[in-house]
Image 1 (tube, rainbow over the protein chains, first blue to last red):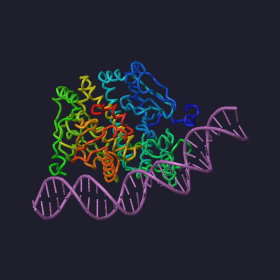
Image 2 (image 1 turned 135 degrees about the horizontal axis):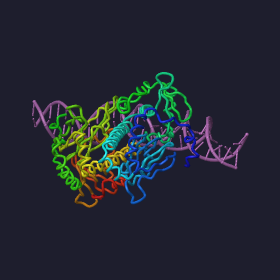
Image 3 (image 1 turned 90 degrees about the horizontal axis):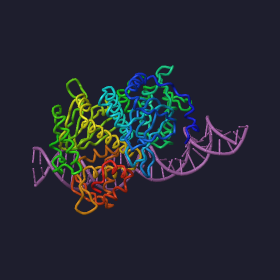
Length: 253
Length: 253
DNA sequence: TCACCTTGTTGATCAATATCAAGGCGCGCC
DNA sequence: GGCGCGCCTTGATATTGATCAACAAGGTGA
């Protein structure tokens, strides 16, 4: 469970994905407003970020600066469910994670996380319109994303779920591949994490990915990197493609 | 599809559920702050509330005053998914509903809804700490609720999902039944709505409810009303019972 | 270099749930 | 009252995806 032992952490990651450029700017601007109150956490895969502040058990707000994290819950007698995947610019408040549900905030790779007391964040929001609108946009995006996620888990079959997930990653973190029509991105999550996110068995997920490769939508690629050969073909497999594009843009399309 | 034709709308509803008492007070206090900007919508079952404001296509914020509403999305080629059920005190912003996903806000019964321009709501939040904290608490609760919902759809089997749903309704809107240990509440949603919420087939849902009745957890009850004979037994069937109680209280337990 | 461990892949089997079909019930409408 | 229409229920069947088990691939540390 130590991050050093995990091969995934040794993979040379992309630099910040290009998509995040404008977000990175906004985050830098935010930092000016927040910095006196922010604790910076360097994340490493496998570590477990505590959701509430130690002192006084206060509520905390987290802002993802770089890297990817998963938010998971585990109900007694069932396996873990990843309820959200957080990318740079996303916000998590400890109140978002239900109590008594074994909630966890787990980095998927190395990155940086800002943490601040929730009450401080609320105050800053009231004073600084830029902070407030950053927060509200983050909430909007996350709520919309969760709606799509619920629809995928509740209504999509196995292949549709996998296509939806890959499309989301491609739109959020992908770079156009040299050969036209394709997209490349890092896969920050393990098979098991992805399966837990999609409400699927890891075996079934593996089979589905294999089928996507043999049908030519994906390329056989190196470990922890995904090469989508034809993004439009992938989009055609996901009922949520239009919604995802509306939410995350068609930058790589 | 007219509400008058629907038998459900003719059922005499409970008055505001007792749980909502403190919430009702808060809503009344809020109204003072918001009233100059609020449009009050009387909801009727089956109507479709438009999510964006007509003029300028602006974003809107909705606050549920009374009644129950469902938020649904439908991706092409799949059936509808209910992504949230809104009760009095809940908030919905149009940005929460993904675009290009056929999002709908649909009252399940008669009630009252406040609508205001999102930008106005944001301004009021910055000025009035009571408005801001109301909003943030609503967001926290809804995010936590959605996490439980995702876990239920992704990991629970059929009976666990149904038990979780019934428990949530019991905790949020139930009243203790005369005979000890039991709880009674209105069922505001049709079988199909519930099935769409739980990611189940309506037939399967019906079967599961029948089994819960014959196993003695539920009473055979009149149409659109549910009598839980033994709430603890119901809780034992739901892996999320502790999380739900932490979120909604043990008032009726 | 080799043993070991984690992660991922693949095949065979089985169970849960969707699908299809038929029928009952309650209610509004004619 | 009788008719027609949704909604709900229940049974028979089909199919998807979970489970179990074996094995491959790659990294780690001695």
